[in-house]
Length: 224
Image (tube, rainbow, N blue to C red; front, side, top):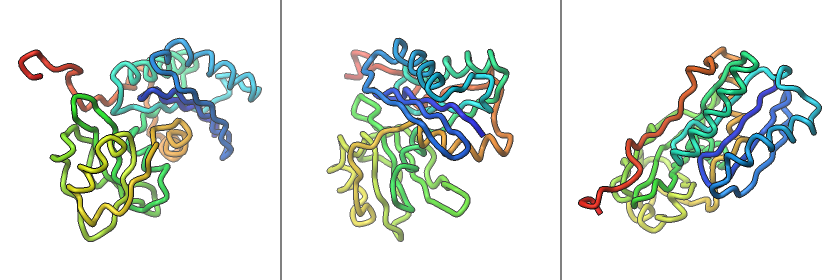
């Protein structure tokens, strides 16, 4: 199976080309330049691999949560490519993609959501993949969902980078470590997408959609 995966949910822009188990990747710290950088990166990656879009089997993207603009960019580009090639699309949780990076069986993943809040989810690794213990939510660090305390958890993501002390105090002994510098990457999105596409869970281009979690991006003056 050949899959093109991409993620623009954070300040990083990453691509991955899954080629029957081998993975080619590209990434750049894009800041606010995802729109300008993404399609040229796709063209370069395909040229270097000697593949055309018509030789792919599907597309995957970081569906969210994350930057509103970034999620729309990734979804829009994937939709355009899928429309042109009539191939299926699968959206992958950015929080689950971070869990996929971590060498641990129980992972809490959190992204900075701005305005003092985090996007938070928790996952347990099983033989068949990641089981969702806590679905993605938007919350203050000190109001994060309570998680099963009989097992040991590892935290990751920019939410833990920013609020590690508060989250460590909140979860106590059940949080045994924090992996710093972790962010969603197209490599893990491709890995998670393969079994879903093989199982026929891909959708058409028009059905692909971001997962925002937050329903507004700024505070009113009265809320500040």
